[in-house]
Image 1 (tube, rainbow, N blue to C red):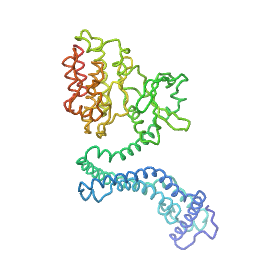
Image 2 (image 1 turned 135 degrees about the vertical axis):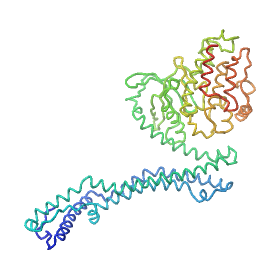
Image 3 (image 1 turned 90 degrees about the vertical axis):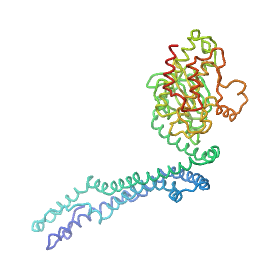
Image 4 (image 1 turned 120 degrees about the vertical axis):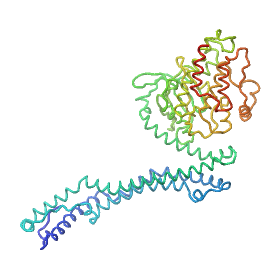
Length: 537
C-alpha cells in the first residue's frame, strides 16, 4: 500500500508544505484501500440490511398498534360525545405519540450514528478529523537524504491510529452521546407527559356515566386483543424460562404406562403420569389444554396459570414442575402443565362419603363427639389460610377459591388452579369465579381486592361444616345467573339450620367473612389467628 514512486515523494521549500503533502498522500492510500475493502465486502449494504432487520422486528408491533389505534379511536369518539376534553387531551392522538416514541426515538440514534461511521470510513474528508497530527518534527535535510525511509516511518505512525480505541472513541462521541441525550429526553419528558395524559384519560373513564354492560361491550374487543398480545409475550418468556423442559427426552419424559384421567375442567383435561426430573422418577399431574396454544385469544388464559405458579413457592400451593407441548397430526401445539400430583380435592372429600371415615360436624350434638371431623376441619382451614396469606402478601387475589380448587396431599392443603389469580392492581372488576363463591362486590362489577377471597373462604367453611354444597336448596335450584346474583347482592347467604350449628365463635367468623361490606371482613391472617384459638375448644 505504501510503495511510492520517486516522483510521488513530496518536495518543497517549506516544512509545513512537505508535511501536508505527505499526510494527504498517506491518507489517500489508506482511504483507497478502505474503500476497496468496503466495496469487496459490500459494507455499503449495512444500512439496508439493518433497516430490513428493524422493520421485520417492529412489523408485528406496528400492525398490532394499527389495530389498537382503530379500536381506540372509536372509543374516543364515543367519549367525546359525552365529555368536553381539555385542549391537551383533545389535540393529541396519544397512540400516535406512543408510536412515534417507540419507533422514532430509539431507532434514530441507531440509524444516524451507524450511517455516520460508515460515511467516515468511506469519505477521505472525514477521516483526518479523527486522526491526530502524527508527523513528527521534520528535518528537511534528513528527509531529502532518505525520503523513502521517512515516508515509511510516517506511514507506520498513521496506521497505529487506526485501532480499536480510535473507532470506539468515534462511536462514543457520536452514537452514545446522542443516544443518552435521546433516552434522557424520553424518560424526563416524553414518558411523564404520556403518564399525565393517561391519568387524565382514566379520570374521564372513571367518571363515565354509562352502565357497566355497555362499557364492557365497548372495551371487550380491545381487552381481548391486549390479552392476545400479552399471551404472545408470556409465551416467549416461558420458552426462554422452560427451554429445557420442552424436550421430553431430556428433562420431562412420560413413561410408556397409560396416563390416568383424574379430572376435567372448562378448558383442559388433567391426567396423572410419571415424569423424569433430574434423573429421578416422580408422579405428577399433567394438565393439557384443549384449545391450541398459538393463534387464539385464549392463549393468555392458558399461560396465566404457569406465569402465576412461577411466582409462587409455598408449602400450601401446588408446585409447578415445568411445561411441555403436545402436537397433533397437523403439528398444532397444545400446552401441557406438569404439576405436583395430589391425592384428592377437598370437594372429593367433603361431598363424597367414600373418601372420608368421619361424619360431618353438623350431625353431632357437641364438639366432644365430633373431634375427628372438627380436627380435620381446623387443620385444613389453617392450611388454606397459610396459602391464602402467602398469595395475598404477594399482592394477588386467587379469585376462584372453592373446594374443588383446594387439593389434599398427605393430609396437607395445596391451593390449585391459579389461572385466574391476578395482582390486585390489575383487577378491573371483571366477573370471575364460581357462582356460589363469588362475592357481592364482584357481581356488582366493582373493583375488588383480597376481601373477595375471604368471602369465598366463608362459604368454604360453611360447606365443610355441613358437608353440603352452598345454595343447593330448592329455592335456588331454578334461578338463572342474574337472579342468583341478585340474591347474593341482596344479602342472601346459606343458613345455619341444623340441630348442631358451628360454635358461636366459628359462626360469627363465617358470617363476618361473607359480610356484604368488604371492609368488615377479616384478613387471612386474622382468620388464621381466630381458627388457632378454636383448637382449644
